[in-house]
Image 1 (cartoon, rainbow, N blue to C red):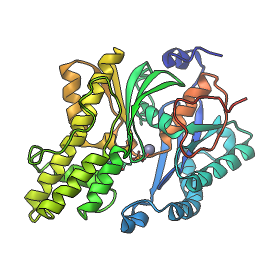
Image 2 (image 1 turned 30 degrees about the horizontal axis):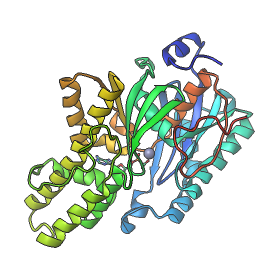
Image 3 (image 1 turned 180 degrees about the vertical axis):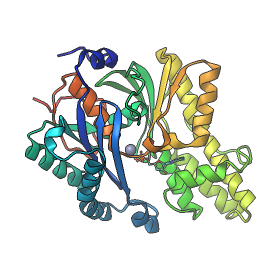
Length: 362
Ligand code: KG4
Ligand code: ZN
C-alpha cells in the first residue's frame, strides 16, 4: 500500500487524478458531482429547504421521498454539465455511506450501486465528515493549487456535528473533542426557531448578528474553563437564550433582535475559537482547516482569521459554495483514496465515528 501520509507525493506520482462521480444524500440535499482529483467539473445540489422549512427542521420521511424524486435528474444534470455521455468516461463512483438519516442515505447508495454495477466501476463509500475535510481543497479551475492534505487540526462544524479532529494524513483521523449534546449548527437552528426566524437558522442569525451588539447579553461560553478539555456543549447556551426570552419577552425591535442574535453568535464563535486555539497549541499544529455548514458563518471566519494572524497559524476554509453539503467533497475524498490505493468499500451507517477506518473492508 502506498504511503498515504502525504497526498502531494501521491498526486504527483500518479499519471492523472481519477475522475469520479459522487452522490450525497445524507440529510436534506440531493447532490451529485463530477470531480477530477480536486477539480470540480460539475456540482449540482438540489436543496429541500422549502420542504422542511414549515416544520422548522428536517422531517426524515419527507427527506427520503424527495431524494427519490430528485436523484435521477440531479445525476443527469451533473453528467450533462461535465460532458459525460458514457460511464466509461469515469474511473469510479463514490457515495456518502453515513452518518446521516438512513432512509435518505439509502436513496443515494442504491443509485450509486446501480451506476457502479452498470459501468463496472469501483464504488467508494465515503464518511460524510471525511467529505467535509476535503471541501477545503475543492477548486473550480483546471489548475487548482495542489495544496497538500498535510497534517492539521480540523474543526468540523455542521448541523449534525461539532468535532475537533487531528488529521494525521489520509484516513488517519483522531477525534480529540466533540459536542456532548447539540451541534453548533443545531443550536443556531433551534435558537432561530425559538425566535420565529425561519429555517435553516444559521444563515439568518449570521446576517442579523452583523447588525447587532455582541456584548449586549452575556451568554455562557460552556466548557471553556478547563484548558485541557476539547469537548463542546451548546445546549446550555440554547437554554440561556430561552430563559432570556422568558424573562424579558421576545425582542420588540429590530435592534433588540439583532443584539440577541449577535450575543448568541458571539458565544458560539468565542467557544469554537477558544477551543481551536488551545487544541492547536496542544497538538503543535501549524495548520487549521474548518469545514461543515457553519464554516460559512461570517463571524466565525472573521474571528478565526484574526486568531490565525495573531498566533500565527495557516487557516484554510472552503469556498462558500462548498461549506454546506455537496457531492464534490465526497468525490474529492474518493479520488484521494483511489490515488492512495486504499480499498473501495461501502458500509452503511447512521452514526459511525470518522476514526473507524477500513475495519469493514476485507
Ligand atoms: O454541513 P451541513 O450543510 O449539513 C450537515 O452535515 O449538518 O450544515 C448545515 C448546518 C445548519 O445547521 C445550518 O444552520 C448551518 O449549517 N449553517 C450556518 C450558516 N450556514 C449554514 N450556521 C451559521 N452560520 C451560517 N452562515
Ligand atoms: Zn454536512
